[in-house]
Length: 146
Image 1 (cartoon, rainbow, N blue to C red):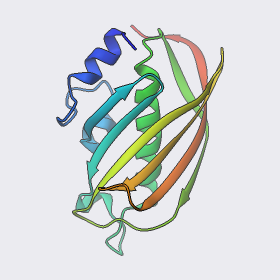
Image 2: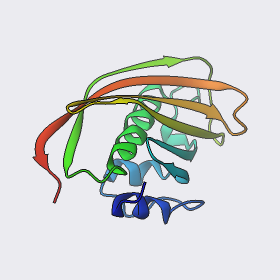
Image 3: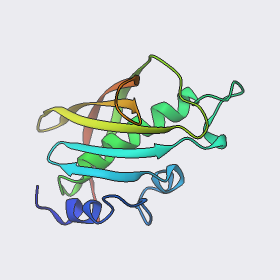
Image 4: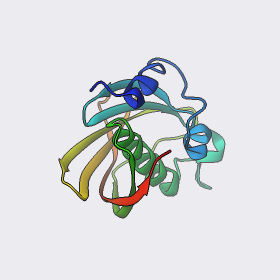
């Protein structure tokens, strides 16, 4: 994948993403691990404000990580159109707690003319424990990026 958007993302490999057009991504503060066609990997450190009252990763933050990471995967294609989430299903398998490092790995399953089907797995730091898995369909909008 050789787009200016993919190149922009690649500059953050092994660094914290800053200056993203997504304010939410800036808040999540991921570290970019890899950028490939149809797949990205991010690393997140779970902060206190990402946890629920039990001190574990909040399900809403899990869903947001998945949605944001998949969105970045589509941006890397360099297409001039925005995609919006049609649906998002999350399966949570085990907990992560404050201070844990987790890895989000995205995969575009099918990229059609209008609909993109993608998934994202969230793993513990050494990818031995699957924490959550998300599935989504995204719709290409008529709204063009600048």
